Length: 378
Image (cartoon, rainbow, N blue to C red; front, side, top):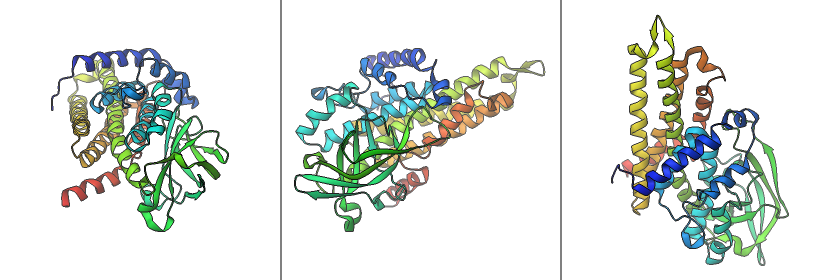
């Protein structure tokens, strides 16, 4: 594993950095405050080939590896976590359909997702099935050449704006995790609707919404993989998603750190910049050290995934450490800013609120500890 970026990776990183500074930085705070979703941003991301990073070239994607994907996610997250998470969520249906879908499904759905003509979403969580994903209640009943879906999902990123949903439902309710299957459900299908839009602590520019399935009839061919593959598909998706969420958390932490360094050099108290005080220096030293460690853990997880090696426990470690780091760093950033850090005139309060969700999505950090412990003890 090399810590050096290839010329292509560094060139792409700079391109994304410039894009984020130009397109995201001017609107991020207002979009967060108003809860506005800017679909045109995703159209612009598509124009520079960023929505299809994990999709093979033969199906219209960029065909790039995860080590490159996380570089992009981190740079986007420095300016707007909502967009970074949206970019990661857009990749999940592509990855799962490519791994488990039929050739017909790949040809029909991958190119529109990779090009940004269609937005994707991943629908697993239910009101009574969060960390305990196997306890989901949504059902899918085979009826001739169709499956009929009934149930609801909550906390769905891109809910209400996505065109293609990868939905987990039970085809054999009495078989627990082995009874779960995965389906492609398109927006506009009769019986598919959207419910409550969540009012969130942070990341408000990313719509999070309930979806409802009432006798929602979809073609039998929309089953992804085989009946009973759904839980496996969901777990692989979560393993992959933990790497991208880790990268997004690193981006948020880096942004808070950069703002803290700049402020500490400018803010004067007792006749000198606060950066000259050892208390502030030690805080910055700890912040910088943790960010570097988190970034390297995320890169290791991506490297292992790219090499086809076991990576689930490393992804859990990376997600755990990176997101806890993001929460700690952004909290310390607010402290360095003092009273101003608590005000919306400065970006660190927004970054602190945004960081919290990274400890929850793609499996809470308590679940990550369970995954890690099971690996260590087996």
